[in-house]
Length: 404
Length: 149
Ligand SMILES: Cc1cc2nc3c(=O)[nH]c(=O)nc-3n(C[C@H](O)[C@H](O)[C@H](O)COP(=O)(O)O)c2cc1C
Ligand code: SF4
Ligand code: FES
Image (cartoon, rainbow over the protein chains, first blue to last red):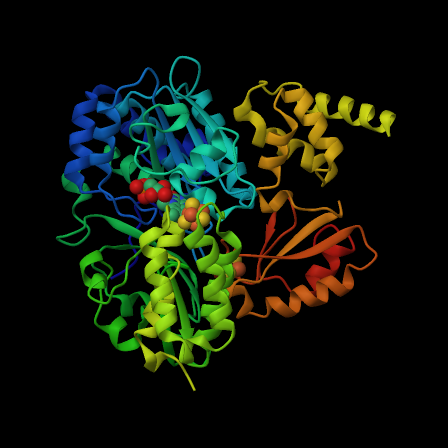
């Protein structure tokens, strides 16, 4: 089956990605007019019925989140687009923003209308300068067309400055407020008390682009692709030892092996041409063996059988010459560098894990590593500390993947 | 010293002139000043604190949180990604050769975690734009300040 193009523009789309011509070509005029003609509750009902789940990692049902924000009490409401994308192996939001920046922004405007927000922020990582430029141009186009501005929703672009943790939703809110990007203790959740204590809707770039294509069409159209569990398509960042690394859009339920091997997708394993393993979901992802890959499709339930998750859509491919202990050392260093240091289990735990791994603990100190991981999972206040040991545990559970 | 601080105050307040003087504009303010000096020293923090009306300790606390503002040499930074996918394509050697080549130049070469261009590894961020499939030659050109590196 050929690659699907919904979130990503058709390759025949020749207009400038941020131009008014692209706006109509992609059907965003239709999406905006439809959204504004609908009652906010109808939009939320459509988003719920579409089955869209968050694409930033946690896969939380998007419509349910919108409903909480809409119902929360507050004199102001905000929408935030999370384009911080600093997860290892993840680059699909960057590709989406470069190829079609208007879609995600249209998603922001629809969300703002649905939850009755007056102001929106797009938070983009500081290294994505080209994508930021596109976003800025697209915002200019929306202003020119009258969709953004003093009479409607105001959108502001915020540039991050090199902090992985700023992508965590409450850390991101602190960053926008001009504070250190340290996560807040939840509850309260941002849906009730987000920016400046007001109800705030935070969504990933790709989630918002999904909303835009949904409103440009309808629920039935949206559900034509996908699995019985998860409707729609998913952007996958394919990297490492494949012939054609890149960002691909495929329906949920797509066989993982086909994603690697189809001639219009990964094109087959590169390097030694023998598959060693994949790491799916990012730095806090799961290593899967080739048997597990052959037995899995791109869907939450299928991957959960192996303790894995689609996460941010990162799919890193390693041939059989890569020492996965080396990969694990890199991941451990990453978490230890990026921990914000606010809570002890994560601050100390990420450092201890790194030390143990650097000193051969993967073979000699497995029990200690497991115990430490459990403590981090149970006692860290945010997702970074809670999920930092996931890749490590997945490798401990797959001794066959560790060489020599 | 005094006159230097005064000069920095003038320059910084000009840079921040059109920014609303709100706490929430602190990160944009830090970016503007950082890109002017490639440095956030106590004098610049002081000037930002004055211009934005945010206490010095708070400005310092925020500035020191973010990796991209950590550039004490004040040289133009070039970040070479040394994370997994780029390392598989030789970025650790790239980093080393860059660091040797940059000695005595107004550029400093640093390692960085994943830059979000793993499909076109190895990647670097030169402080303004990201470049991909970087070769040692391309990095050397960039260090020498040649345009189309
Ligand atoms: C350490 C950490 C980093 C995160 N980074 C991102 C990110 O870069 N982009 C993103 O969309 N979500 C990120 N998330 C998830 C967000 O907290 C949040 O769940 C998401 O933005 C919600 O949007 P969604 O429901 O549309 O996925 C991160 C979470 C954690 C714990
Ligand atoms: S778990 Fe780690 S990153 Fe999260 S708040 Fe605690 S120290 Fe910071
Ligand atoms: S690992 Fe270098 S860009 Fe992702």
